[in-house]
Length: 426
Image (cartoon, rainbow, N blue to C red; front, top):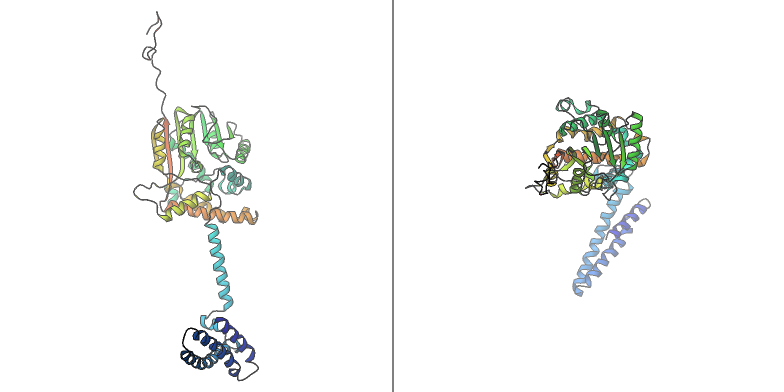
């Protein structure tokens, strides 16, 4: 029926200008269409019923022809009125098409940005190599690839009034204070990035030996370059897996891990390895993005969807809660004084602050070309989604610290069940 109407409208549009009585031309066509319906109906009814239907259809056909002509004349033949669709909608069809096209484009873009692009697949080193080579992350975030610290007073004044890069240095100082470490002689920075924290600690403790490890060869290269430029001689960087460190037991007075646990596929092994290389009496301190403890409040389907996006966009295998970190630390049996805190309040501003620094100074991205434009848009979306996850309590900023238990005091030989040599004093 729709095809028949399309044919009639086309013919009316062409003949209206040539004939002042177009009804005569269209009545036979409409009549034939109506008759076809009658024939179809007759296949399922008696001969008498078929005749009645055919007679009725002939009259309906003439009426239909007049209606088609009137509609076609209004839609096609008037030079002063808009098209029928525009008359009904009150909007020019071109505008409608443009709006529809824009809507489809935005929908497609949202689908793309909502689909994670860097799912964890032992690819952390490669991802950080790429970020290092591009230079955009270092340009905006400086030497420290971690969140910044904003005091209560600074938050009251407005986080945008604080220097974004200085907030990172302040975070390191606050994390050191939280750890309680005093004058460590040997320091290990697990997941050191460009080495900003390693160099900062090396400058603070000039007599200490500082080692930073990362999976990214490009970060090791860049960290070493910056140390040389800054004249920092008591720091070195190595490519090394934090889950299988090539250091002897009891090697470091301070083991520092800032925002590296997120990428670890085995959180228990992560804690155990850092505890292993920590000296007795030494300090372990960890900062890590954590998901909330489920407890008696299970994650909703939306919570799970949001977490999965955060896992898969920045190569995270999974997150754990602050409380779970505490259980893992206590579970080693080698750590004392485990202390846990949530620093969400004083770090959450970093997410949106990092977006604004790009808005205020976009030129490095502008000159990088379309690939970096697209990648930067993805980063902005993820930064905002991170902010929202922390804001609604789905995520927490975990701070964990503890000291390694001292080795048991050496027992006297006799007490150990050993025989005391003749003539020797027990």
